[in-house]
Length: 69
Image (tube, rainbow, N blue to C red; front, side, top):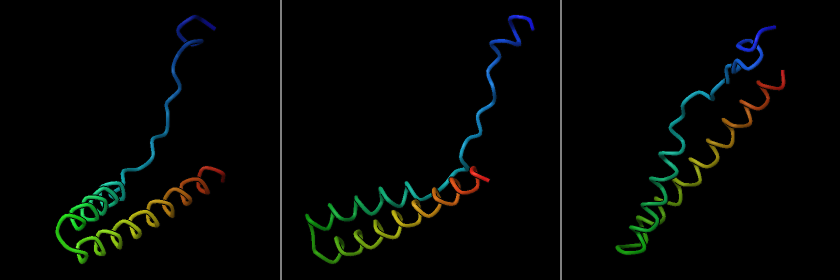
């Protein structure tokens, strides 16, 4: 085995792209914007935040189960 083969980087498998982090941040923005304006926006932001958090967790769990197989 020569030096190049010995220290050659192995390819990493990247997770597939997802939109959940964007919606999580969107929910946080609406929560704080609602604090400044009215409670309705905070409520909508909280709903978006919770849905995005659950969606992201479900997607991560699916990926972990797929990697274990």
